[in-house]
Length: 209
Image (cartoon, rainbow, N blue to C red; front, side, top):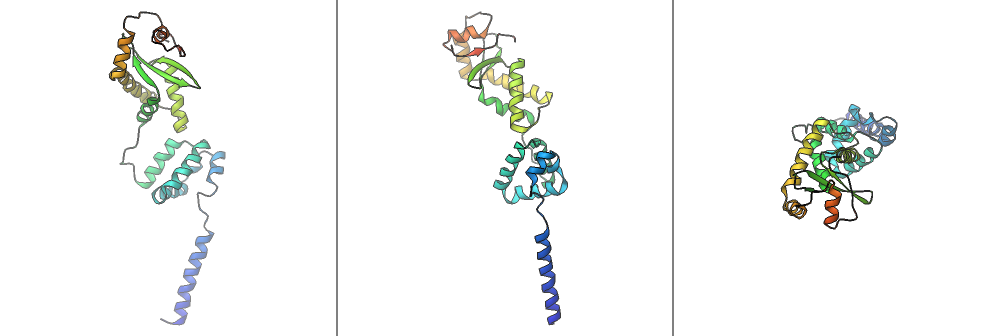
């Protein structure tokens, strides 16, 4: 190989390196862009870079994802878009109903003698007890979902999750024992039942609210 050919090859390599240095990382300044335009992470070039980052450096990806969530990015939609970009759509992720059911695990579930399911919640330092089918519990669960995903659950997902949550309220030994302890109380509100059991620090909604 001649010296001229060697020099030409070296120049090509040097030019490639220089060009690479001039290419800006699509993720640079992404948080600022997303704060101004929530659709910025969904640009094809950025989605490709996010998919590569998730594969190559999961910790860095999760840190960026967390910060994107704080800017108001629709994280659930972004996760789906990144999965599609990386070809992971065949691997089932958690559905909205799955997420709702997971979030409801922070509630203490039980049922009364008439088989009505209830959720006992810790809200801003005080306790509230709602029927699982009541608007108050549905509102709490939807708010938790928004906090976790920056999106709203579909009505179908919420209904599906409530069915499972109510079944859980009927199924555990703890709930069965609690129901037995409440047996015989025929008051018009669950708050009276809870007071009889010593739960005097709770605020509860009337039955049927």
